[in-house]
Length: 426
Image 1 (tube, rainbow, N blue to C red):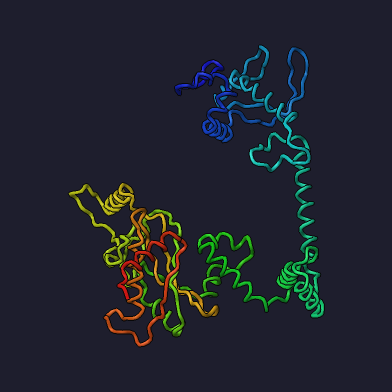
Image 2 (spheres, helix red, strand yellow):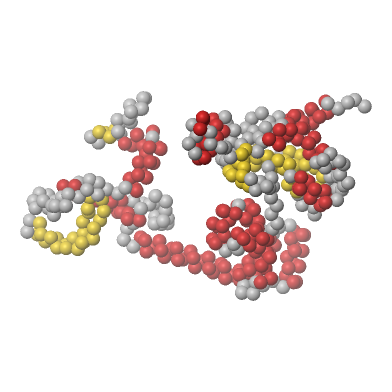
């Protein structure tokens, strides 16, 4: 708290926090909050009102005056004193006026760095002509970018030039002065920016599909206009999207059998971060379910891991559906059952780079308790699904699953040791 221009810190051991400079260093968060609050809550405002006033027989031309907001202007002025034509509250804002004028004349940044537009710099602190100077620098930078873009438009390479560049790249490696990669990009940009670029529509659609998969549909929709990419609908139509259900996806396993055609396949897994919240979704039958809760790592229990929307239970204090859902979420938070990561599994062919990966499983992993024994149980279930149908009959063309791969060396080694120790001796 501040008392008579002195600070008295209520925290123990902060007896030195009596000066604002010391308090600011020891309380950076409070200082930043106070600073942001002060910037958003001005105490005075400048009112332009050119007039000629007379003080003690002398005439002065003024452009306007400061009106106090906190405390508010009293609405009437005194006819005598040091500052006539001003109420007491507006007169109290004189230190703010002097502080503003001092910052306008003495505030400096590094040489050559415009202050206007920099984070934390208020535009009303700018000197006369400083905003105009910043605007001219901005226009100059735009002009330089435009000239660079025009030079890309004029790039034309003949087949002989391309062959020479590629040969030089193969013989001497990547050139530092004129790398072939930069030349390819310049040529592509010049073609895309030309008026007759209809033959490059598929390339633009492929780029949009890659960005959509990386950013997600919502973020892509926000950034598509900035980068001049097609809409989210066009990006979604460019690539095939397959719905992946939590747990084993039998359709994905059957698609992998048809795609790999008997080639040896390994199972790969990795974890991705989750946002730790409950999200509703519709299952294959159109029923509403909730995902986001940690699953039991034992694969035998996965048939009962789906979380349904809770019903109203008046005995537990539920008033309506919202309070029932709130009770469920609070239970999950208190028991640390919101998943912070999701395990993703896919098949990868060992003998062909033309066969794309097939994702076949996704499940929210527990925050603790996931062991190598659970991974072996998962692989045992997956191997069974690769050779047998769900009804237990052998598949006519099984999936040639020969191993697994994970990014955790200790986890996979532990599973291998357990697997070898359970084998019968020859």
